[in-house]
Length: 124
Image: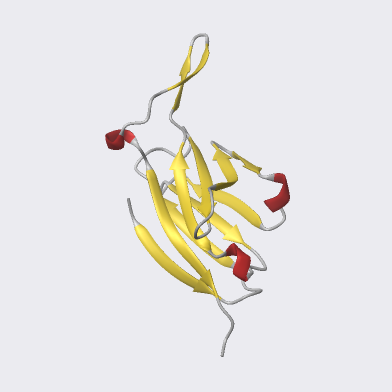
């Protein structure tokens, strides 16, 4: 697990890059955030080559990937104080089977996630 902190001024762009140990062209990667004292909120997923977004956030965030460096990047526009949160990237643990998809149980040794904290603040 890696942790980094970034401070963004209100109205500016946010970029958080997640480098992973798996092939981003083979697995789905999710972006999730958690404001202090609140629950987790799914932002979107990079699904091998296609992004999917939470409807209410699709105009604020975009997700892209680079398979050569195994990175998935979250970009945000017009960031506001309410976007202050811990941002996580996390891999789905679903494997393909002959009869469909099967959810593998999560174990500490096989979880793939990173987190970064984003702050927004006004210049004083």
